[in-house]
Image (cartoon, rainbow, N blue to C red; front, side, top):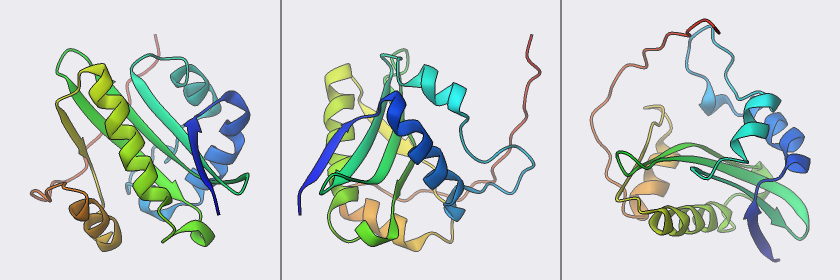
Length: 148
């Protein structure tokens, strides 16, 4: 079994959206759409401040990871990561984390964080094993601004 981690390209977007919409851990409990649109992902993959990755296992789409970098604060925010059920526990997630952290360091990042549902114990344990610290619990509060 070979895991190939590569930068997300436009031909990956449909698979990414499909898996993203099917991942219950991405739900925030608000009325806002719970995953990124094709338009958003298409623009984001062109940004120099993003690390958008896909994994292929034996040439089959296995998952994705989406991270943004803010050069002003030097923070990396891991928006989401999803691995198809049949490819879990095969180091795909570890490869995503390793590649993401490597890319963020190259950009000058010095701090990385993410939000995880309190009930997602599997992801908390996964990240703790990779040196992340689990912090306080916060409420997700959001507001959509109208387009101008």
